[in-house]
Length: 327
Image (cartoon, rainbow, N blue to C red; front, side, top):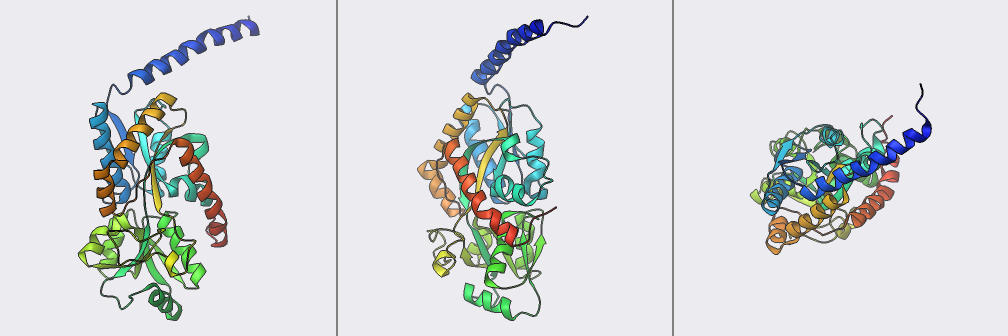
């Protein structure tokens, strides 16, 4: 016998408050067990550094272990997909960035996730400019030298990034197209190996974050030619910005964020956003981040969403014009 629709509706209404109550109680008691933060890139890069920094800070703040698990590959999509499939209960977070929230969703329809549908984006962690760098032994000393060399070269200039569809990849292709040079992208699973190959002379230039490149630049094995920042960074005063060299459209850092599965309870969103802002904007942390090539800024989730929308408006036509839309 079919159960009457009214009885079904009454049952649903009776159950719903209980479900909401459990969610609310769980949020109030959170966290009562270890919390996973997925690092979406290989160890040694900016994402890994930020994941471990906030894990340490949050462990201290909440008195519960926040641990980092690395799941790299596919420009971060592997790590993101490992989190969006988990319950939105506050025990699984993922380091995201402009690649995963803006660039890859524009260029690749087969990611397995969509930011608006599958993610709660809750905190801005910091931004590290992309630095165009060459081997320190290279005769290229400036951006003008680099462009002139590229135009005269009889073959495309090889460059590294942390993967197909990554911010470095798309920046490299977009910039090359704008200045009229030919380049060949050499993707790596992470920033570190690509930079080692640049130091070793196996590729000709790199489009990686300042954070990833900091050790080699400070150590004198790489030379920073220009970076995508609004102004020169205090700890890298000899590296000019693209804006001051006549390319003002390349002025945005590669920003990193923390995300969770869609539907994360608002009390947990508020707790995490507030505590991460405190951790990242503490004076000692700001100084530490600057040395690592990272600029920090406190944002609410609403401000973060506005940033995502602004970046999407800029990058969609750039990616389309560069012919980087995948089918």
